[in-house]
Image (cartoon, rainbow, N blue to C red; front, side, top):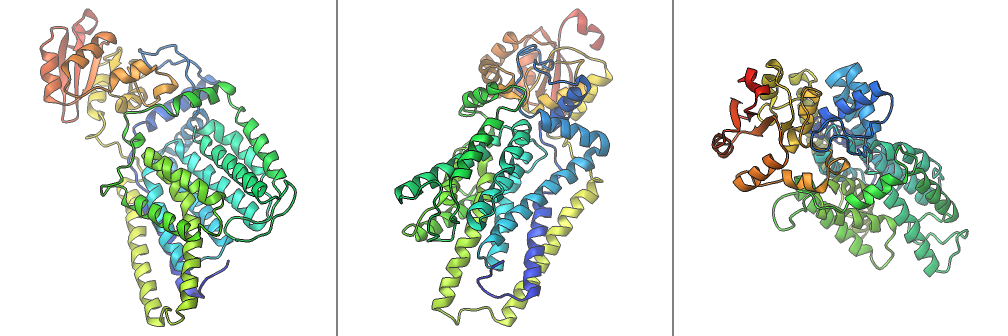
Length: 506
């Protein structure tokens, strides 16, 4: 590992401790994702069926419709872990994936020149950026494989180490774990295309090594292996239960607008996502300073992930991972150049001691807080009764109330986990993998729009309405003789259709 400045061993140790503690702190949250319980249920049913469930059995609005479940392997893994090790297995599994990602990113940083203090600051910031997406969700595997793809490409161009054969092997897994495999595929396409264009402009052939004129991204390796492994990796995207239909499905659905917060754009002129904005500004500045020398594939793809993040908040973790090694290297070079011009600008022994003590204090706090979350909850995943209809669902089960259930999409998979097969739901987080555009659109209506609620209830007749608590909804339903109020708490309210079937429940 190269160092721009020679730091004492104790400072390097505290730097690594800070990075590790940041991972513990930011990756140890124990709250449940809205779709977690659905994923476990789908994995359980898949395991019991012994085959891919290709048609929806869980809803009454799309019952029997084709289901493109591109997360089936993740769900099988989630169920297996949960069945063997419960909540703790899932929580520690998530933390383990986080540690692997941090280890891989750190390994990429160490391939090139770096300053240990810059490394600590940038990596801590990157972990912060990654953390909002670090719930127990299938996308965890996309973050993991994205980092591994990064390492293989950096090793090839910077070290001359040919590990490209690993890409198709990883893609076979990734394409069955989560639709985010498109990010890795896109990275490989961009890298291959950019390097081909760059070398073509400079007059270098596919098998000819080019001069290593700038060490940031370009080890003089031939392009032919890159093209070969790109083609092989592209073909492995077809190794899934749906074949080419999965790619057609993703091509059709990925650009679709979604009324979900994580798919909304980042507002650039407010105080939200400051950590992302700060790192994006650093990227633009360091790239601008380097523009006259050469912009490599790394900067190009960081720019693409930055743009994708601005359009959709859920992509910020990819930007954080992609930008971290680049910024560690570029800022380390910048500091080295400044120190060459101003040799007196060095850390004194006292200042190094102060930095080390400060990092130890911060690292200790982060480790304590992260471990405390697990200790306080007993390594259990928290299902917040203020966010989920915990008591309302228990009421339905205790009273043996069954039937088609109209639910908000954020409660759909929790209801599947607790109530299926007695109750089929109207919508859940699977969205376009099973539901039509019309069903999705009809469920995303203003909370107090009487006309649209009437339309929704009439269009999708149900036996039960499980809704979020609100005075509007209570008054609205009570105006109708069709529905009978049976339960409410601070979170949820339940109405039953006034039919013979439900009379016993009244």
